[in-house]
Image (cartoon, rainbow, N blue to C red; front, side, top):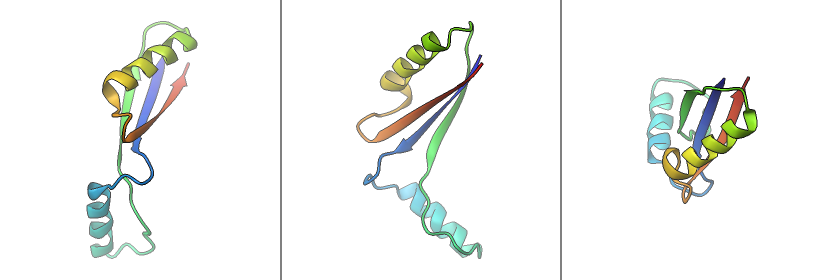
Length: 80
Protein backbone atom coordinates (compact mmCIF):
# COMPACT_ATOMS: atom_id res chain seq x y z
CA UNK A 1 0.00 0.00 0.00
CA UNK A 2 1.26 3.49 -0.79
CA UNK A 3 0.60 6.68 1.11
CA UNK A 4 1.43 10.32 0.66
CA UNK A 5 1.80 12.65 3.64
CA UNK A 6 1.72 16.36 2.85
CA UNK A 7 2.95 18.77 5.50
CA UNK A 8 2.29 22.51 5.21
CA UNK A 9 2.69 25.51 7.45
CA UNK A 10 -0.42 26.65 9.29
CA UNK A 11 -2.04 29.90 8.21
CA UNK A 12 -0.44 32.85 9.94
CA UNK A 13 2.99 31.20 10.27
CA UNK A 14 5.68 33.14 8.42
CA UNK A 15 7.19 31.28 5.46
CA UNK A 16 10.54 32.85 4.52
CA UNK A 17 11.37 30.08 2.05
CA UNK A 18 8.02 30.58 0.31
CA UNK A 19 8.72 34.33 0.11
CA UNK A 20 12.15 33.63 -1.42
CA UNK A 21 10.58 31.32 -4.02
CA UNK A 22 7.93 33.93 -4.76
CA UNK A 23 10.61 36.57 -5.35
CA UNK A 24 12.63 34.22 -7.55
CA UNK A 25 9.60 33.37 -9.69
CA UNK A 26 8.86 37.06 -10.18
CA UNK A 27 12.49 37.78 -11.08
CA UNK A 28 12.27 35.01 -13.71
CA UNK A 29 9.38 36.89 -15.30
CA UNK A 30 6.67 34.44 -14.26
CA UNK A 31 3.59 36.65 -14.04
CA UNK A 32 0.52 36.20 -11.90
CA UNK A 33 2.19 34.72 -8.81
CA UNK A 34 0.30 36.08 -5.81
CA UNK A 35 2.04 34.20 -3.03
CA UNK A 36 3.94 30.97 -2.44
CA UNK A 37 3.82 28.66 0.58
CA UNK A 38 6.27 25.77 0.67
CA UNK A 39 5.83 22.41 2.36
CA UNK A 40 7.05 18.83 2.44
CA UNK A 41 5.78 15.66 0.77
CA UNK A 42 6.57 12.13 1.99
CA UNK A 43 5.77 9.13 -0.23
CA UNK A 44 5.66 6.08 2.02
CA UNK A 45 5.20 2.41 1.12
CA UNK A 46 3.48 0.32 3.78
CA UNK A 47 3.16 -3.44 4.21
CA UNK A 48 -0.31 -4.87 4.64
CA UNK A 49 -3.73 -3.87 3.36
CA UNK A 50 -5.51 -2.49 6.44
CA UNK A 51 -6.14 1.17 5.59
CA UNK A 52 -7.34 2.03 9.10
CA UNK A 53 -4.18 0.61 10.68
CA UNK A 54 -2.03 2.37 8.09
CA UNK A 55 -3.74 5.69 8.73
CA UNK A 56 -3.32 5.28 12.48
CA UNK A 57 0.39 4.48 12.09
CA UNK A 58 0.93 7.43 9.76
CA UNK A 59 -0.92 9.77 12.12
CA UNK A 60 1.45 8.68 14.90
CA UNK A 61 4.43 9.22 12.57
CA UNK A 62 3.21 12.72 11.75
CA UNK A 63 2.56 13.65 15.37
CA UNK A 64 5.95 12.35 16.54
CA UNK A 65 8.30 12.98 13.62
CA UNK A 66 7.12 14.18 10.24
CA UNK A 67 5.30 17.38 11.27
CA UNK A 68 5.80 20.01 13.92
CA UNK A 69 2.14 20.21 14.86
CA UNK A 70 2.61 23.55 16.63
CA UNK A 71 3.24 25.30 13.31
CA UNK A 72 2.38 22.69 10.65
CA UNK A 73 -0.69 20.84 9.38
CA UNK A 74 -0.54 17.45 7.71
CA UNK A 75 -2.73 15.48 5.34
CA UNK A 76 -2.60 11.72 4.80
CA UNK A 77 -3.69 10.19 1.47
CA UNK A 78 -3.64 6.40 1.19
CA UNK A 79 -3.87 4.57 -2.13
CA UNK A 80 -4.70 0.87 -1.79
